Image 1 (spheres, one colour):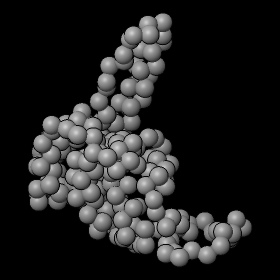
Image 2 (spheres, one colour):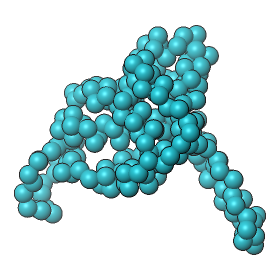
Image 3 (cartoon, one colour):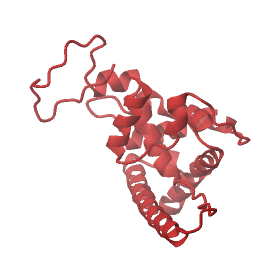
Length: 208
């Protein structure tokens, strides 16, 4: 599976643009003064793995934790995010814990599966509402300054949970376990057959 195909597939699943996609495709590091070393700590990776597992839990197939999406998130944030998004993601780890503590009186790692799902469902709605308002504000701002050729629109940060959700999905479906267990995978595919029979419920094909 190549990078463009992977990003395209995850973009379809999430219905939006993947944050950091331009750097992921080019393989270039954006360069940053933000210290992301703490994202690679054992505790933080375990935390991000549990967030990922809540988003994509184990069912008949392995969940996100089996693909170590926590480690994947840390690498992607360090290598493929802008300085502004790195900062938002780092702060988001603490904000997610604070949100859990405020809602249930306990940290995320102490919450049970039902509580974690309820929390992240709420954060997902918050992130979607934020993105909608962000888009509407950007459109209004553009119209307001349409005649000013020198005007530069202010940078509005992304929502931290949007990043976590996107990286979980991208990390899982581009991993070996995601491509071979959750998707159907042929390392050496045969000829293209546009009339290949498909039954509702069949797994999607992984791209090699």
